[in-house]
Image 1 (cartoon, rainbow, N blue to C red):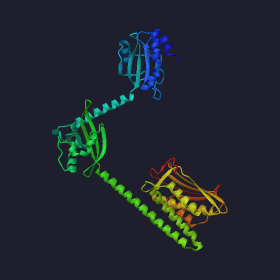
Image 2 (cartoon, helix red, strand yellow):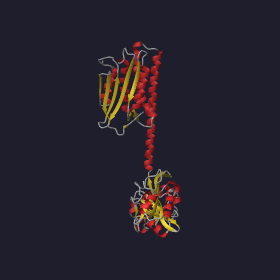
Image 3 (spheres, rainbow, N blue to C red):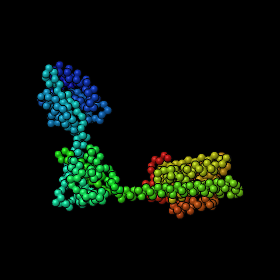
Image 4 (cartoon, helix red, strand yellow):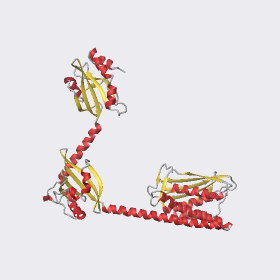
Length: 480
């Protein structure tokens, strides 16, 4: 890499004393660049007449590159950097001059001369990329022009009372710099009459009519959008500052009546609260029934009846789990099926595991699947029967057993799949039972799907398939 001295000797006619001066200054360029977050260069006259060349450069650390490659030894053109030429030719510094870099970016330049014995030997240039600033200024200019147009549209004389603004559903107020009304459309007139029970007039203070909007007019923002409640009415208020020749001349206020929308929001909230209250009561009622069954079981039952009571208890608790999951989360009537299955599975393993066999259950659920409560109840009963079937029949004469649960939603087919796999060496044939009848009936009638159970090389696998075309029913990469 060439040094500043090498470049000066090769490309310029500077004397030794001039090169020494430039070289000493170049040693501090990096510190200047870091301190000012700017690119810093030294340009000197080249051996060719009316040409200048970059003899030293420094770029700030940790800032985006203004120049993708080094510009050392490159020519400087007057067309792109007139400030450099002016400073070297006249000795007068130039500050905050905008120019176009050799890579086509808009930069702000500060240029100061480098002199030796009162002779100009070069220029020290500091450049910052202001492309984003220029873009924002252009946007502001366009916005100003737009507000000028709006101001002209709404500032109609009363002689042409019915015009374009009166066709707009929003209430429009054009107010002057002193916040007095200078124009309002027909919708605005109706708003004032209905909400405030007074007549709207030009020249009166807008703030006296709508004191709750004053802070929007004085916050210094070009555009402000907020909601306000006025005498039982709700409005979405847009406040736009108006300009003429870059000077604020007033504000344009647009008010949209959203009272009906707010009322519907309240109704939805009330309905949601009511639904959650119903879920809460259903859960409590089911738990009450479960408590009664437990109480009866503790008071004593014939040996042949204990199993039937426990099966009924598990089914009731599985249904109750649906409403517990709903109430645990923020959904009104959507159930996190993965969470539900884990809750039921863990409950059954805890209640049903015998002293002679240690049963483990694992879950492979990579999606957060949300389904309506009616479908969730069906899946809860199916999961209960499948897991109970594994616990009771799969691990006879085994000291340990494993159950694997899978829940999959294949969106391209709109198909939901629930799989229960065990590694038991139990029964090879499946007898008709009340539990399997429950699974078949729910799968075919409630879910309009299919159920199959069979032996494979691992053990026994039960699988439920059904279609679900509801929107937004799952989220990928669910780890819950």
